[in-house]
Image 1 (cartoon, rainbow, N blue to C red):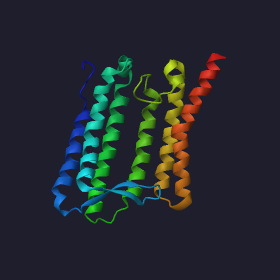
Image 2: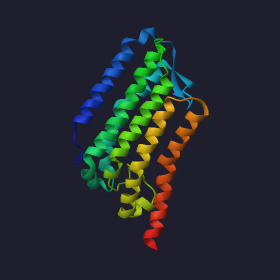
Image 3: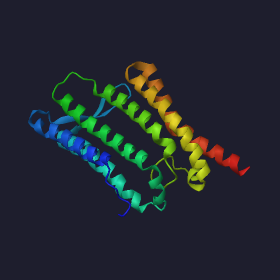
Image 4: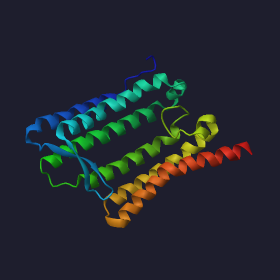
Length: 217
């Protein structure tokens, strides 16, 4: 645990997490027995959970998941590399925490009868998160637990560097598409979001394979 460093982002994660949990618990008695837990690309609710499970899951993930990321770095064989992108890693944890805390607040507000489109707001927030993470992605150094981890990036620091430099651009473009899709509807919205996911997930993986082959030739 010698690699663990408490940063201001961790303090903010805890504060936001406790605040969102407090909001949920204060209004607990006013909530229906079931709360929305999953939304489709169209923004419509696909699944409901018992309110106890919904509050527990979103609340715990908003605090625990980002903090677990602090501890897991200590078991990474390449843990020394985390020192080279401390701020990027901390901001990524914060972004994840903010997203889950926002989901809890929106879910509770929806349960209280607020006239909000939780799905659209959540998709827009996801787009903003991708934009933010894309800004930090080129700073991420090779490791086994965070970033674009393929057989090719993990076997070559150069492939890792080039892949994450491209990934940063893809995540920012993808985030903009997702954010734009949140304000549209129908086929156009779905097309933008699906295109964004291809850019964010598939393009970096394919690119890492291409770069690996080029370096070996």
